[in-house]
Amino acid sequence: MMLSKYKTIGFILITGLSNFKAIAQTDVASAFKFATSQTDFMLTQVAQAKAQTTNANLVVPRNIDKNGNLAIIPSKDWCSGFFPGELWYLYEYTKDTKWLNEAKTYTAFIEQEKFNTGTHDLGFEIYCSFGNAYRLTHDAAYKDVIIQGARSLSKRFNPVVGAIRSWGNIGTPKFTVIVDNMMNLELLFEATRLSGDSSFYKIAVTHANTTIKNHFRADNSSYHVVNYDQETGKVIEKITAQGYANESAWARGQAWGLYGYTMCYRETKDKRYLEQAEKIAQFIINNPELPKDLIPYWDYNAPDKATQPRDASAGAVAASALYELGTYSKANGKLYTSTANKIVDNLKAYRPNIGESKGFLLLHSTGSAPAHSEVDVPIIYADYYYLEALIRKQRLHDHQPVVKQ
Image (cartoon, rainbow, N blue to C red; front, side, top):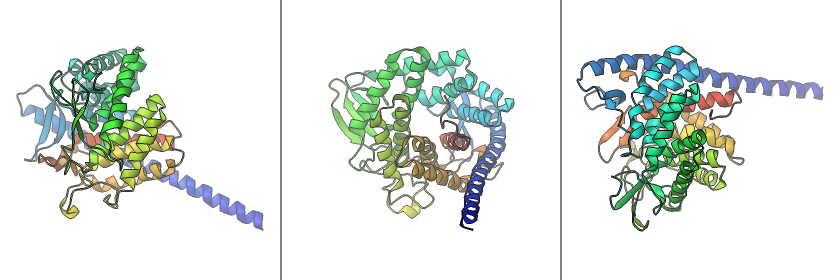
């Protein structure tokens, strides 16, 4: 009798686990069905927007502007790589050559940025587009763009400061580094792998180490901006330009740091980066100002939360990072994965109806509240990291490495 009882319990547990996995797979399939429909619609909206302008440099979507129009941007905009990357994710999941062809078309629009030394955002521009392109096709032409992009990005590195300049022209006295810049290191790691040139790797880890030293507070939140003297490498000031106050925790900045150090651990296996990622994760997950649906307000310390906008992009970036971090953490892996699952599930409430919002996937992101720029609107990078999180969720379900390289 007892043996039969335990067999029955075991059957129930196994069946329950199977049902859970089936539900997880169904959720991802449903989300991608929504995403393909919306992106079909967005392609028509992009074509219409391009037809209404004489500026041939405007090539990819970024947001919905204050007048309700689809904003189209040039390749030099820091957000230019996200829509091509989104198309690559649609191809990766669906295997539909329609998305392959669209991805190739929109990726080609960004290629000239491989020579751009005037921005630190080449990781966003080149890696999100050409990085995914090479990962999924192994086309040597994409490989060459990645390596050249890394060469251009490397020119912004200052060995005295030990970091890559974010804002400002090369050579200006005030050397600005923002926490977002952690995201661009992935381009350098990939270029090392593809070229064998270890200088890219050395720049990436030096920048990561400098950022750990100077960007983070005792509670493991981060400043947005650290300004250095480029001649001495000394810190001049620490501020939070896109946050509520200099000492506040700007939500997307925390997500950038979480993602960046998780990625750095993947690429180096340096435990300092894993520890830093876990510290940031705990700051986010345990934050008393995090709403019940786990989609943060634009700044954790902004007052009068009832009147503050959310930032779906910060939620999407954090979810994608937590899926990966969950595979590395022995103590908290299940917590990180379950938190990512909750975020992704709750982001369904941030989706528009099919055929609305110009084809964007997520509403309610916030770019820069202090500048009154992109407040409570769809923004393309939220969509990119939402799809990336879904891809990672599916890979975990399929017992594959969460990051396919």
